[in-house]
Length: 382
Ligand SMILES: Nc1nc2c(ncn2[C@@H]2O[C@H](COP(=O)(O)OP(=O)(O)O)[C@@H](O)[C@H]2O)c(=O)[nH]1
Ligand SMILES: [Mg+2]
Image (tube, rainbow, N blue to C red; front, side, top):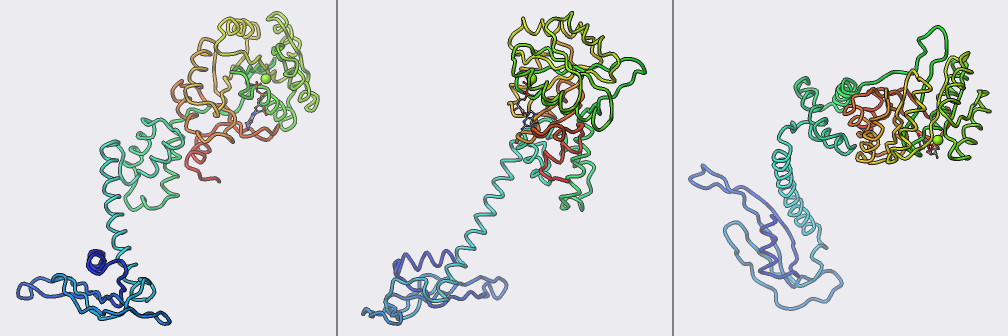
């Protein structure tokens, strides 16, 4: 149809008016083969109601075996004004679209196969979703390939089922630490948060402290060694006052040791650290001295998902010299690149303890769970 319409246009010009179209089968080769014939009735000089006619009707013309053009009619520019004409045009267009679509699909499939020969075609859309969430390519390939081996073909079309299975994979891949728990019978469980400036250490301390104190009724002591910025102390003091916890501000490792001792009747002591730049080795050494004095039960490295993967890796490298037991990822509410959490935790092989999802104290914090992360990665909330 598209071909025939093109011929009408080339023989009769763009002014041609389509009056009628029809397709039918014609038997060939003694009736053994069929051939589709497209017949278009078109003309120039068509008189549309209310418009002055031009002269010169044309006689039917045969264009080739497949196409015939008939009709002695009057001229008009309104190619699309008759229903038959617009039908024909639409049919032609939709046929062309359909063949274009097939072509593009084939091309995409070919390119995919060439670029990602390890990714099963059936799960390619999920693979793309993982990649778009910044999951590292080798991890995304591993996830969909393992899934492909497990899943029955009849389940492939059920998106919820497939997503559930991907979530299971992610759960297995992501080491998680669970919540902070005090195991000892006597003395305070000491937790220090370290990490680059502005990632949300102080806010996270406030969230943890508020939940421990107000929800779980624990005795919580707060210590900050962030004496570089007055605002930082005020920020934590405000939270300490609201929660009703003790806050000690310390300037030296000796002070820190004393402060920890003085709070030994608490169940938990949370230590906030200065946002020292990860590039500053001198201050990192200072941080190490502080940590050595505090003798914490656990040290959590706090990282923000709003930073690029490179930034996060640089921070890890720098802080790698300092003791790190677990990882907290902040600002998942702002991050389009949730995959970084999976990549980083897997790469450094430290367990994810918490994620934070907003500025609200104490609500926007959750214990890190693979299933929840999978929901964020695959864009399905529940
Ligand atoms: N959107 C969002 N903002 C956060 C989150 N956690 C902390 N922030 C904000 O990040 C900024 C820096 O936080 P702060 O706790 O002072 O970072 P610190 O320098 O590491 O102590 C503040 O404006 C916080 O409100 C979070 O989970 N989501
Ligand atoms: Mg701070």
